[in-house]
Length: 185
Image (cartoon, rainbow, N blue to C red; front, side, top):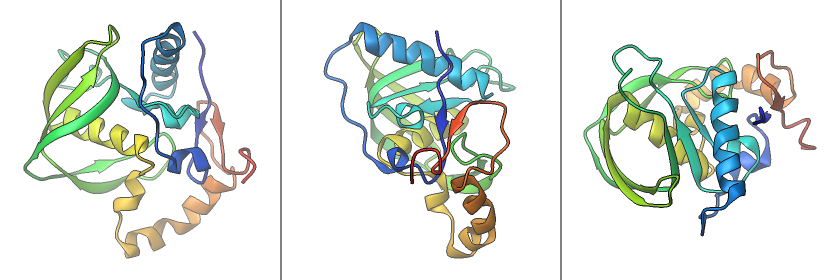
């Protein structure tokens, strides 16, 4: 198991679209294990493969440490796709790739998704509230979208200094990162 560095805002890999996983391999399983370790080290509740520099459609989610969600088992989702969305919910979000910035984002309240599990079996899952939000946030990563893309122009202006610091590598976090400056941008 390995703790992988997390790419921060401004790194090109975060804006690329991840590719479908065609088959389950030892490398895919190792990546999933390492993603869980990395997410936990960073005290996150979700992580997409793009965030660790791998353009594969894989996300991991673990909300079991959150109050009221202790019964939800950690999930590894391969090739996740949203097949239904309902309702609207506005809650605050943050992101391991955009450390220190938290802002309210509007997302669907409930979703149905289809994905492959770690046995490469097709699963359909209904998720609501926090679990739905985390899954949608991570699926956005797979499509090259960050939660800050949902901010209004005024909100983006408000955070511009902080975003510039993140892009220039001026971040202090308790997990390894590769900043845009470190990625050669």
